[in-house]
Amino acid sequence: MLEGSFLTLWVEGEISNLAQPGSGHWYFSLKDQSSQVRCAMFRNKNRYLKFAPDNGMQILARVNVSLYEGRGEFQLIVEHMEQAGEGALQRAFEALKQRLQKQGLFDEDRKRPMPALPRTIGVITSPTGAAIRDILTVLKRRYPLANVIIYPVPVQGDGAAETIAETIELAQQRHETDVLILSRGGGSLEDLWAFNEEVVARAIYQCKIPVVCGVGHEIDFTIADFVADQRAATPSAAAELLSPDQAELLDRLGSLANRIHSHIKHQLQRMGHTLLQLEKRLPHPKRQLQNISQRLDELSLRMQQSIRTNITLQQSLLLKLSAQINQHNPLQTLRAHKEKCYMLRGRLRKSLSYGLQTARGNFERLTHNLHTVSPLATLERGYAIVSQTDNGNIVRDASILHEGETIKTRLAKGRIHSIVKKITP
Image (cartoon, rainbow, N blue to C red; front, side, top):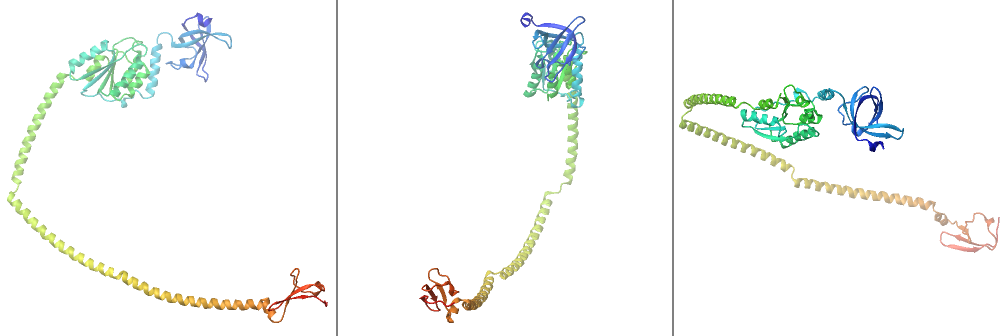
């Protein structure tokens, strides 16, 4: 019922109990001598303010009536806030001026000089205001050679500052002017406020084309005046600043023409005198040809002598290289390697023969040793090996045998199968 019964209201009062939590929303009380009311201003609205509120500050607020259900409190939702009373705009102006000055936007060392004879002048202003008429009148009277491009913009009201900033950027992108004039006629501080917006100051600061600011009257100062490369008291003064007087230009051109004529005349006289001196010093062409011919003969003789000397040196070097080549003849190297191969082959045969003899002797010695320890040699001396027929065990003790058991006897040559008839312990 509260939100549906009241339209947007304007309320004036003093801020108290200001709270600014990390969410970015602001909560405070707005009071006068007899009453107070709770207020809330959310982050999406307070970020556009040009000043920082504080307790005790008198403000004028545009609000909507609402109810905070969490505590059952009647409150005002603040949509817009401005400082109340005279001087609010001036305080905002001073605050922005100090902040931009600290950031270096007003530094003199970054400001560019104005062109002496601009060919094209861009004018950013209202196409229907008095400022453009004053500028065109001055330029037509003083400097009719200049081309003028008008960039129409609104110079006051909502959105004027943003349009001015966009137009400055557009003029820079098109790059069709040598200098820009930013101007409007006089008015109150509220009327001139578009030229006190930070967005306009940033656009002037970033513009690569020199900017002259002629806003208002001589007593009017705006933020744009401090950022611009040159300030003019009025729009007419801005036009006069950029336009040399054509009468003065004609006088100057006449003076320069006289100086050029005098300089050329002096140069011709000096060059004529120099030419006469050179004619006297110039030798006769016949004598020059004789000298050149003689010089050519001398050079020809020196060249022939140099060629002969060079041929002699080359022949000597050739003989030396031939001797070195003979020393390194591949046939001689092949012959030496062939003899070395014959020698190595003989040594190899001797080495192989000696190795075979040594191996044969070692083989015979090992064969003899093996035969010496072989059981077959023992058998050849008359001994025999007796084993049991059923399990093949060697019989070393007669007591393990039984009468009637079959045994095998191995001799040096052949085997005997026998039957045990009697055992003697």
